Image (tube, rainbow, N blue to C red; front, side, top):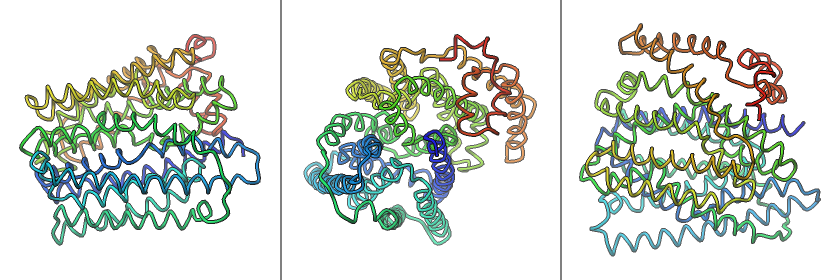
Length: 511
């Protein structure tokens, strides 16, 4: 099997599993929001936010280290490769466990010494959020062991099974009675189940002879990138929920923000979930074997991800209100405006690529550059949140995080341009994709008004047909992209050619 086919197969398994897993997780989020109500959902979001902070502070970014160094270890033609991998994993997991214990202990002291200055949910439910943080931290590390080796099929089966159990469990709670503590205990139990399943399936990676392998680069990479992992916390949902919970007396704004973010995340990542981990793993291999191919593949991937993300986001923008009411109930209708604000920032940000920038720079060994960008973005987000949330509530968090993430994307594209020498900012392509989606979105919403599932399905069908027609007319993809798709799948390549321009018309774009 060629590396291209192995990557494609890994992506497809990872993608299929991640989509199904995220669908189950999203349905679970809907059930929780309905069962806990607006205020209860806000308390639950606050607990998850503080829990994720413990995970980040204890991570040392070891997941990213494994994702970078396991693929490079596999490139070594050595009979001791398995023994070296076991040595690496045992030491990494031992370090993670030690850091977890230390951070949870320090956090407990903080609640005892300054409990009055911390939000009430963090103090009241401390051991529940600490237990949840512990299991999620180990789960994330185990997942990366599978992804870095492109062994995504068994990971998919385990993750989907656990998410299905979680959905069934919270659905039964919706009938029998649901509370924040019962939900947290249940999720801790399912996390332990997932850890046990992963360890059993991947037991050959941990049990057996070992051979010493240099770990200083692994720890050094993690220690440097750790700063960026912490900064990413403040650039994402959890950081905003933390500030909403800390700066405001009511949990309602945090609840609305959490619902809006969950919906936008589902729409924005629904087709790209399989790229998680796979992209950095592939970039790391290409950085060693073929740097020029890495540059061309990066440009193609930016175009492909934009095509996957923008159409869904634009449809959601024009239908935010009906979708919120249909999924979460009328109680959360006010979150529709937040959804539209988030989408506007995300669509503009795709002009400058996204996480692909950081993964490219990491694969090229530019860890400090990624950290520098993260520091600027996180500082911007924190300052804007502190200024805007007290006055504009959840909308202030949308503006703060939107501006900060847009700045991160712009800086990331400039850093990639400096290292790769390729046109990262593809103005023409982004404009064609955006116009090809916005025009059908406006038309479909104008000619098919109304709310409810039937109206949404009708508008969705009209939007899909009109968008497909617009893309066929504009042909936004350069002809060079057909070659990339052909390496993965011939049938997909034949369809892809319908939306690609001729070679002589794309020489300026085909980078």
